Image (cartoon, rainbow, N blue to C red):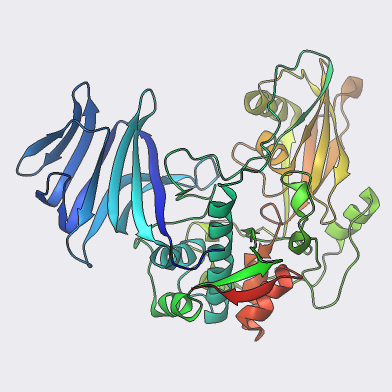
Length: 445
């Protein structure tokens, strides 16, 4: 395990033809020249062109790095995409401390990487994933969780996990497609700045005194299990019960990522379709079962507050809408859809294998994120849903209604549940050990 604070390389943007922004305070380029004010960087056949307000500079090196000359200096980048492929996707200007590394891959455009110490990075993460005005105990719990996940991911990169199956062409009338998405697939940096890894928006979000205090109070503190740092996953809302690791990723048992009730008293797992119907019809008094606007304003960034129906939700598609959507997302022409049938569920009710039957072919898809990806223009809130078809002619339903629970994959820490636990007086330690049963806390640096 680590014994000192690592320096992170965080990918801010990829595939850009131009990177523009402003040096807020003095920086230096690779030749030692001082940089300040607005800039625009492009890559042409001869190398890098860094256009400044007063001059343009060229660099023939494969990459360039601009480093701060002052501890208070920062870089503002324009048109940074956040929420990539999610329903809240948008562009915004963002400000970062630390160094800026620019590199180029043929056919892929420019990548901008922020180089920053881990604890400085975490100040932004807990202010980007949550509102910086969230309860102090929640901020501490999230700091421990985010720190643990990140370092576990860095250590895991030295011993790569099995990769998801590679999907080939679907050539038969029936097929099974099972895939998942790893977080170790970045070639040019340690971690990206978006929801694929952890939200990191530099100093763009308000880094409050409480957020700074949460990092200081938990500095170097990790969740550990059997002398390994925990792969501490998190998401927005479990819907009443958390999910197990194998439902979202590879088929291995992770003891501290088992399914638990997000309630003071234990509830049974969801084992049948009848259990799932009851789960939706009679929601439990779970920690994340809250509509308290005051709590939600405290913990959710502004764009997440646009999502209000996270605990129980419903979406309806006409047959034509869903047929076209699935064809676009999967690349498979099913013809008019006949049925969507859950074949396997995890203990939280999240579907891990869904049979999609159409006039032309039948395919079983998994795991949970691939199901969510196929059934929504961005990503469905979760795969914990039941399907109600409206009968039509010739066995072809007119429309499908999906009624579901929760927001996210459900594995590990439930952010909204953790926030409610904090308002009920639970300590940061109690919160993280509730969501990661069997783990322990240890200070490593």
